[in-house]
Each structure stands twice: as C-alpha cells, then as structure tokens.
Length: 162
Image (cartoon, rainbow, N blue to C red; front, side, top):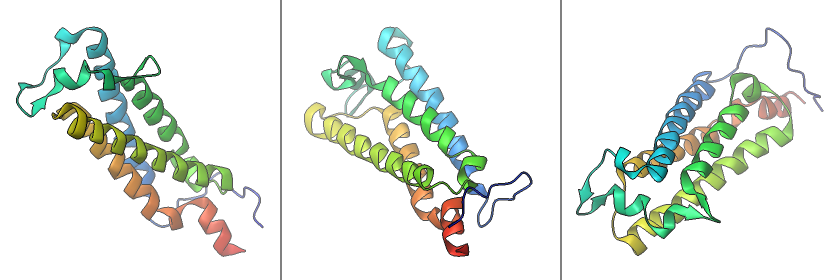
C-alpha cells in the first residue's frame, strides 16, 4: 500500500480544477457566513427582502437561527474554513485515507445541515432567506464536486497504483 507518496513537484492528476473550485466556494461561503454573523448581532446591517416568501429578517431572527446557543453562521464559518483546508490542492492529492474519507464525511454533514435548515425554512418558518439559499447552493456544489471527484484524489489514485 502507498504510504503518503506526495512529493514536491507532484502534479494533480485528473481534473485539477476541483480543489480550486472548492476553494472559491469556501471563500464565498466564509464571506457570507461572516456577513450573516454580523447581521445576527446587528440586524440593521441586513440587505435583503423582509416581506413575503423571501424574508431574510424572519429567518435570521428566528429560533432556528441558533443551535446550542450558538448562531448558525458560526457553524457555516467553521464548515467552510475546515472544508477549505482539507480541500486545498496539496490535501486533495495527499493519499491518506483519513483525509479522503474526512472530506466525504464533511460534505455529507454539510448536506445534512442544509436539508435540516431548508426544512426549517420551508416547514416551520414558511419563508426563505436568499443569503442562506446561496450558502445552501454553495454547499451542494461542493458536495457534488467532492463526490464526483473521488477518483481524482490522491487516496483513490494511490489505490489504483497498488
């Protein structure tokens, strides 16, 4: 079995755009999470519709916007920072099983959280937040890239070499 054969000068095989795309997704997710955290503490900073089906204020001030006494944007911030780190190009081509499976687990956890939050918006609050929806779409895009990019990771490629 390959033992972390990552060497200086190794090039990313397959589709090298994947970790770069995830990096962009994570930067956007971090920026929106920080903005939503600011809005959590300073509601007047909100730039969004506050009437009808799209009512960011209602979503961001609801009891669903806090979990375990922690504002949900903090979870988003931690998620995007963590996923950004384990999806860096050097991490993407690293052949450690724990890293590859951790990336999959993180993507699945992210989608699980998105499903929960969308259910809260649709079934409990009967309204949506556009900022939250953008974060949900970013998380889904990251999930798709990670799942479809499995064969291009260092772990998968090291398994093919053995």
